[in-house]
Length: 205
Image (cartoon, rainbow, N blue to C red; front, side, top):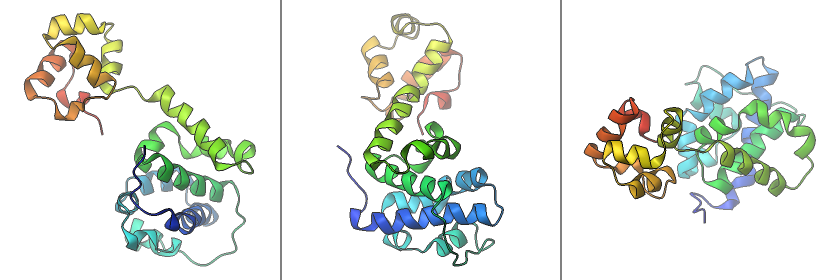
């Protein structure tokens, strides 16, 4: 069950403004993929995710000013509600309904990928897009520990034997039932030594 960081009352206004922002930057010649990368890593996106009312109520013009530290100014314009608008709108909806950060969503579902889904989903119910998006997450959402272990050609049992970390602990970390970021330093050291990686490589963002 997702615990939302803000009321759904804010969602229509916020989704519209982020949609307008993506359409606007395309209109003024900013590369939308570079813009989206800037946005998902910005303080503005983090404040939205936390449910900060100041950011939830910002116009797209004010959001742009915040994201670019005043270097890019938004102006009122007649929106076409095109694929760029829809991509910003639907990604905001997805962030709300999943509770994932914009940054995490972007790792599995790039802006280009969403834009390519526009012909199929822009007139469909939002839940159809969300169901499709969840398939991307399932496909890609392996823990760092699992990815590195598989790349080294080790089974969970073999990694357990070599690292002297209990196999059940490895399973729980890989399934994200236990948070590897909170694992004991000795456990992380043993796993990293066997896997030939840095401890930081095992941690999850």
